Structure formats: C-alpha cells, structure tokens
Image 1 (cartoon, rainbow, N blue to C red):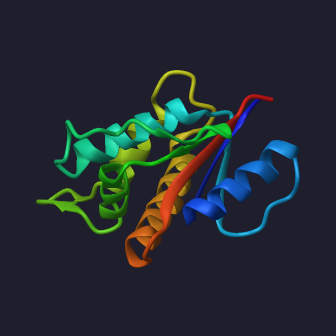
Image 2 (tube, rainbow, N blue to C red; image 1 turned 90 degrees about the vertical axis):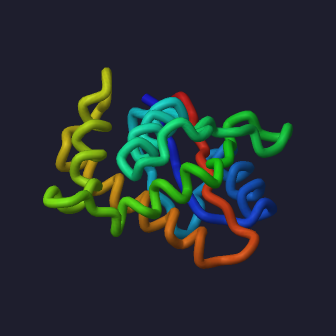
Length: 147
C-alpha cells in the first residue's frame, strides 16, 4: 500500500525531501502522511474544497515539479487558496464547510479512511495551506509512492 505525503517547502527543500523519501530515509519537518492514497485522491480533495468555497472550475491538477522526481508534485495556487479557506469559510446558517468536505472526501470510491479520520487530514492540510500563504517562496507539495 502506498501513501501520499503533503508538506510545505521551498522548491529546493522539496527536491531534497523527495530524494530522501525516494531512498526510504527518514525526513523531518511538518508534513501530513496519508497511507493508502495517491496524488489522484489529493486532486479529488482539491476539487471538493474548491467547490465548497465557491471556487469550482479552477485548475486543481497537481503538476510535475522537476524531472528528477516523477513522484514529487506541486499543488496549484488555486488549490492552496481553497484548502486554506476551509479553516474559516462558512455558509449562511450551515457553519463550517470543512466537515462537509471531509465527509465527501471520505465517501469517494476506495478511500481507506472514514469521515472522522478524513476531517483530521483535511484540517491538517488546510493548516499547511494556510502556512504557505504566510511565507514567501514556499509551496505545497505532494510526494506519493506505491509500495
């Protein structure tokens, strides 16, 4: 079973982290590791988050960062913004949309976790996205591997 690791880094830091992950080395630093998913499921989350914050239709496709690693992908700015907004976005009378996004993500086909675990992941990813928006020259990256 593979996993996806999502983290905040500069481009150079992301390449170093990807190289370490590809070697199976331990890596330090803030990251969310989600077993049983790939970059595809992260893109699904981006679509759900974008729709929830009324930013549907944007490009939420992860992009190859560097030819040295086909497992390292960059999260587009639109997805970073949508995820970050989940922390504070509210709909009239319905409260936070984060719970709804987490439930919808967990309900996607073949997801290896339930809505409660999904909420924790979505909240952690939203916090990482918020960190990206606070720092210069950093981005949100996804490294995924099949094991």
